[in-house]
Length: 392
Image (cartoon, rainbow, N blue to C red; front, top):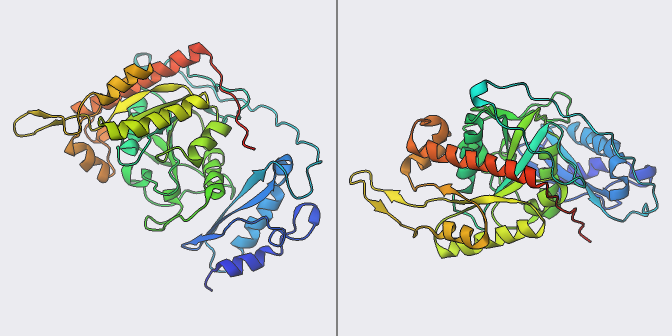
């Protein structure tokens, strides 16, 4: 049987709405339904006041869809609205009791990292077991942000930390290719996903859930819902750092992370030329406005060394990101050269930090990762807290 939106919609009419009034289709609670390779994706819009009590409704919808012949999987998430559905007067849900964070076992003396930063903002719900979450962002695409993010993550791991990577670019996920990971994530209970593993990193990406050539034609609420699920419904275990590879720009994914997650800091990736720096400033200003600490700026494609002559060429100019960091009072984390080996190893799914760990490029990334960790410790000492953001 061919799985169609019409068939899924019709079956979902059997799922009762809140308080058994009507059904979730006729009540207008469904988002657009997306189907790829037999997997069905959609969200259910519920009032924020009742969101914590709507899990049975979500689970019922998921069961109904999975029972359709031809469906190989379903990703069903809840999207909360502040008001709606005639349930504004419902009592607020009781806060969940705090869950203990697992303690890290002692590492070898030569590689023992300093204590990890705690969650920064008490008003934002952290992810149990993850000590620090950092965002790697850029104002525009094409500056090598994902390659930088994965090599920083591997550099942190090489320095003795337990590291995960969340690929938050729903429309253009890069981590499956960059890390050479294939296959689908498993789930022990049908709800919580197990992250994929390679090179010592725990990884989650939309690229593991749909085929590489499948376009993700989703509106903002679906992107936010999918991102929230990949962050909070994954068995990350204990991590010192979760590196979030943001999509380029300043859209829904960035605002969702700033609104819902106590980010320990953000890294901005730019190339040296003025056009890229203009967009990098937008990213810097966005994180500043939501009180997310700026860990620093990385200048990617900073210079090119000709392999035959050893002569240096500043193809995109040089030093623009460093000067911008000085002007804005932000830490300059380092320069990454424009080097063919970085591109070739990334395309092959073996990032240069693991494929050539003794090379000069890997040393650059490890140095940047060490500066990032140092900045995290400084922000921990500063003890600054960001405000909770409410969108009306």
